[in-house]
Length: 161
Image 1 (tube, one colour):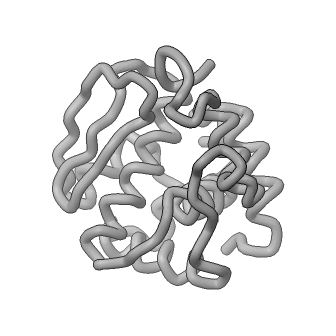
Image 2 (tube, rainbow, N blue to C red; image 1 turned 120 degrees about the horizontal axis):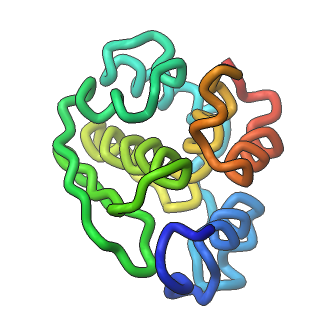
């Protein structure tokens, strides 16, 4: 159930890598640790809501989000990566389903951060992703993979809107 074919450069699956990043065990695998501490995530998600022109963007289906923020979407076959982004474009894997939806959110947050000139590590942006997912209403939770929702429930405690 990984995003890509095979392990990431760290030797972990994407899910394992995200778990390591969120638990601050990333350096054990050559990955960065979080550099930004709460409450920056809440402020960042408020700024993201402004970019998306919606007070609660997590209440929208993920497929609607790139267009709301004027991102161009490019699909590509990606090996050992879940996606990529810059200020104008989201590069997403060509597969469909819940894993794609969480990648949309993650890469959208990367892209918005680049537009806003924010600096952070991959661990910081995954932490923002799980906080975003923690705010998804019950009627849309089925769109995301169970492991990502479980991580959001665990790590976003006390940071929901």
